[in-house]
Length: 206
Image (tube, one colour):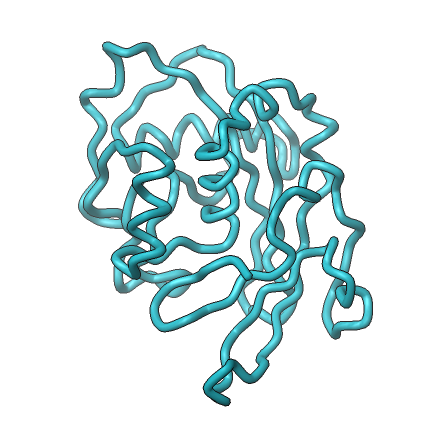
């Protein structure tokens, strides 16, 4: 994983997987091929890992809540490396910093301790990996990953009375009644936390 630049206009200083925008040279705009080409290119540019022609498995899609002025459709891909591969991985030092390998459980522990900032999609992906659901992710067909997880975001009072940001996933009981763009809950998201709250400098599931 990599730490985003503190100067980034979106999710500054957050810990994320390699990724970025789809470029015109990646393929036809909005096409599956363009997203996959972008994933390969960004993995090389940001993390120094060249995936070559190894298979990429698309397993998840998230869309930024409409309450956020900068909105993105983010696709998540799984690539498998051998035990002797990946040693050359390194952050690019410009857009990303402090790149390193660690287990999902290690990163979740750092997030729980407030040592790193894990955005909600990243947090949910790490939870799946830590819970041993890699086989389930491998088994998803592309069509299973196409429908996006579209959360809604709101401000609510925390236990101390201070306002805090809460991200509400589509399977939450009150999701439809909340303001903002909505979409049905994909089946693959039903085992995720229904709400994720911003506390201090980190996110945690409720």
